[in-house]
Length: 441
Image (cartoon, rainbow, N blue to C red; front, side, top):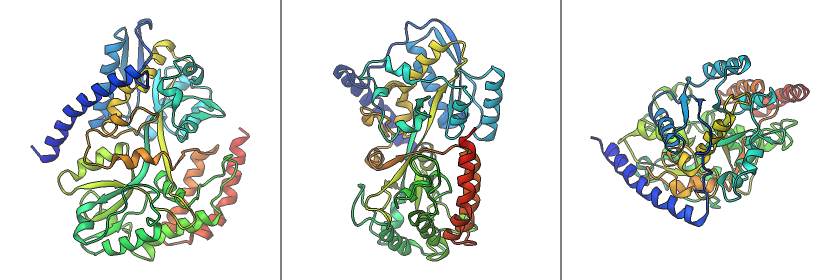
């Protein structure tokens, strides 16, 4: 048995004991543990769908299914999962259109907004308003709550809440005599330029390379937020990629590869990965990535989590909160049972399988003691504190198609075929037209 397997097994035993004591304390104080009862719900069978089809994700789902059965045995939860990506959403949209959709299911932005716009989802804010004021969902963090709303109405319960942080290969930094990043957010000396100097010292081809570029999408968006550079205005009516904060920030990130050569190239990505110990740092998210990375690394090296540095166009760090939603079918034939299950999934007990594995960061106060208890060696506080500096994931109308255009343009910059300023100047008009067109539908 490996050291990692032994330690994780021990942590699970300890974590359950700690959580049990903590839940009792919260209940005594009238805090987040006051989950509304489900015993009064009439017998029913509901279908629950996500893309947790194997491994730790499926284990988490099965644990939640079993936990709900213990408090509401009269409600049978039938798990019918489909692999993530196009297959998942193609099947889901077809089922909902034909009236055979699941009762409770997982969705992300922008797909859930499309479903809300189509009238497929049940609004949950009125249901939450009936519950005790001390209940967790009455106190969702303000950086998270906006990501649950479409046109002012709340349609889902957040989970898989994640923030971009830095994954650091500590032994590699220490072996090369490079100072580790600060363990806390908003340290004045931890800037993009300070990170660049460290990455130069960590790049020793063919043995090591400083970093991977943040993947295009939420990870890149999170890094740009630390340079005060959102991709859209607050009203989500037009793009802001033509502002210097955005295109200069994007160029700075691309230059890590193309100018400073401290980031892997596309070709090098095959042989230099964070998991095999040849890359010193990865700009990544928690949630599913955390458990997967730890499993891949196994006993190869010790990693830890650190905050994102402050960009040159900002006075404070920034990052992005991205998440999934549990949503419920407006046409469910068992609406009361579906809502009872949703409430359980949002309770401390229902979220525990996600929290203790680090799959989801806390979504409301009172969950912190459950978070990442299976990984006590990691700096969980950097993830907990990230919500103080994070922006919510908000996408404009038509983002599914806009994202494709942005990905194509950013790829040109990443590969050094085009300068960021030229790319955004060419692309912004068509993006704004796509937003205007989608807003009229």
